[in-house]
Image (tube, rainbow, N blue to C red; front, side, top):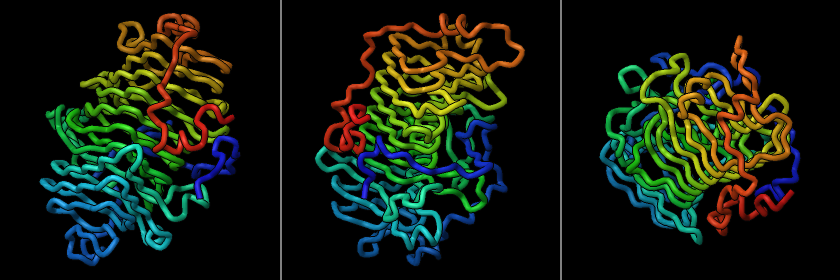
Length: 410
């Protein structure tokens, strides 16, 4: 059962010691040829010769040609991979559940490879839900691997291409308008399962160099063990997104992400989770091109009030244009790490912003810097007590955020 009321429950959870991922506070892991893929089921493992088909009500295997999944209740088993040239279409109202048995067997997830497409186009009355039987009852790692889409938009790795840490699949290219399909009215619940070597966990939604031709609207990441939405380069635009109860970051970007995020709500449980936004351009290469510089507008954040954490962790050369941001219940609102250049030249700014219930507004974490925190805040922020934040009506009827009372439930 869904935890109710979720915003009053104190969770006794702890992240794995030594946890690291592309979205961790430490150096970003870069995929190598040695990255283990033992978690990934092979063609033989799924028992259907590698052809992605519905075995009764079980979706599994490689999807090599167009597949329509009619509205209904299904099990998701193993690594379902949509191959180049194929489209997986899911009708509104469908639910995919990872069973306890399949969770024990290994990683269960959906990959969309370069050239493949997923069309999961739900409605407010009939959202498409990806969930788990266990509902992360034991805490710690999530129950399954979420959705990972690989596109051909630009990113800032050397040569403009890379391999995803999960599955070692290629992403990147030069097509910023690349179309990987539609995710609309989609909930991803209890994701974030760890890899077998413990080197990373899977996000709820992972967008690897996904282009602006892809539609991402009205999507929710709910109670995941890793990040809610992570953008690895690319230009995809996300609208009406919700991240509730994530154990790591709610939104994460790096590798030159340049899309937009419009109308977002983030609710972090007391004492649980990392940053609401952990934002970088490229680790160790702060001036790599293209520089991460998305536009983020109409956002409301409710924080966890954790010591040593912040709503926004700005680092590794990221830019970003933020407008109409409302946030509260954080020890610190903004960490600035490697961004004085971006603050000075206007590549990083917050306008129409209202923060309350915090101890520190801006903290400068740059070593050997004599720039005062208040001076950075004056240049970085334009405050407005009348800022309105997110339009919460966009989340009515279909999201867990709305079902539990949203920000009204304290």
